[in-house]
Image 1 (cartoon, rainbow, N blue to C red):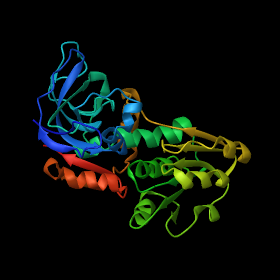
Image 2: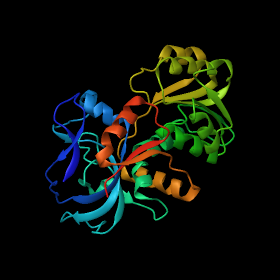
Image 3: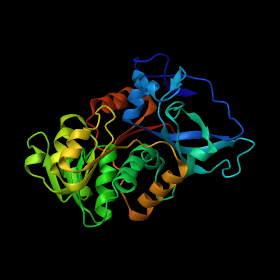
Length: 309
């Protein structure tokens, strides 16, 4: 089968022939139709993710995919061949960017008929991060104001819509064509971070969702009201506990890990609320290099998807 793999850290993933995966008793074999890339995949390739996950090389990249169940293990009762599913693999095993992939049966949820395989593949990591950072961690409520940094990206495009649908006032930072995108998705106010210092325009917000890190996170503490909440997904930027204390706010890190029950909740919300799954580009596996370059550029608007069948 075709698969995109690495054999050593820091090498560019390439399309190659790989053996079909074996299926354990509690696993399902999925004929992959579409796979989505995440910044996490770049961390796996660089070796940084090995600090947090047990990774065995060679590894097939990507944790998020959708397709049709081809075969089930002997202990699997909730799925059968022919079922359309969204799968969310652990980063330590990954495996989604291949013609066939195996995951625990518990890592799959049903693909709603209202969503294409490409849309389904784009949801697990980004959609779950946006949903749970806003509602499980930040406890965003209707009527509150949220500032979302990086509103045009994969997580941000979901977050802007979730917050808008929840009745919050949404302020988003973006640049270029991302400005119009986040307006269309429901942002009440848009700030061009390349031309404007958001800290001079924004104050007394209830929640900051920091998807960027660095200096952006550092300037975010001051725009929160007393008792406000900052939630960051930028693993490379440690929280400034001293700044949080000085401004009288809370600060939390959030990283979404595969959890089918939670994914099911997010998929249901996307289906029921008519959330748009924003896809930056959808390319065949033969054009993987283009997709990888787009991912590592950090300029994607929404999700990057690779079609396999």
